[in-house]
Amino acid sequence: MVVSFRWLPSGGSLANGCLSARRPLSGLRKVRYCPASCPRIKRCRESLPLVPCRVPEDARPPRGVAVLSADQLTGVDESHLVEVPGGHRLCPAVAGDFAALQRDAAAAGFDLRIASGFRSFERQRAIWNAKAGGVRTVHDDRGRPLDMARLAPGEQLRAILRFSALPGASRHHWGTDLDVYDAAAVAADYRVQLTPGEVADDGVFGPLHRWLDARMAAGRSRGFYRPYGVDRGGVAPERWHLSHAGSARDCESRMGGRLLRDCWRRHLAPDGLLLRGEIEAELEMLVARYVTVPPDWCPAR
Ligand SMILES: [Zn+2]
Image: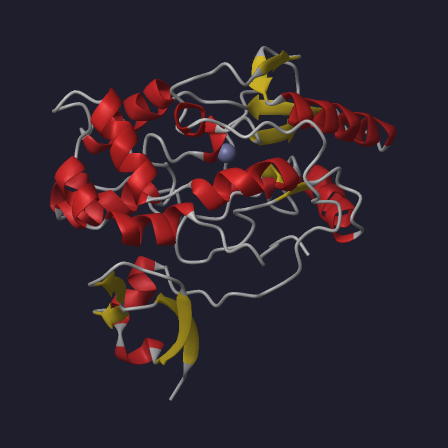
């Protein structure tokens, strides 16, 4: 019998190969399961083992990092941001360290640029509703379009969350996280897609990401790390997504169901968020699985 491990929220259980929880979650526990006896596990592709590692050594909170308000944390208030080259916006401390990382990259022959920096609550809401409403394609882990009409609401929810955050829960709201690419590796008219193929070792941006891996491993990444570097059963791996650890730590610790409920109560019309009923019914579980990144994790190291 093949036995593997997966992480299960405290109070949760394995039901048909998918996580479920019946009471508020306080942490994760490791459980054994047999993949061969549970075909849905493979189909869900949500059961890869976790590999603990250390937090980046240069992840100390930088001087001058402001504590964000609830509206800033959820992307409603944009007053904590500064504009950086390319028309993107970041927190001031993050912008400074990213400029330094760009200089490091340039010295190594890369043109490190931002594909996406700050994203507002309204923008995230538009993305969410387009996917939940069938206007925008939702893909599976292999990049194939999903037929959302054939999925139950709970399955639709998980399919979207694999690649898109709940409005108010995106790390891009904080100004601490950004998606990057190497402009030196492509023609000026190249359209960056941010696909797994682009950032694979043999992809067009593979050399940049190998260089970033080495910098992170050496503690010389100016505080940036990859919160979605490996598959922990929630958000799909996103090698292109960097986070400024020292700046994001406080935001991570304050993100939760209560903050989101309060945000939605104040900023959403009654019909402003599709699948809201399903979301609110299991919000704590969704936050634990798709929003929270364990504090002692650093996938790149
Ligand atoms: Zn991102």
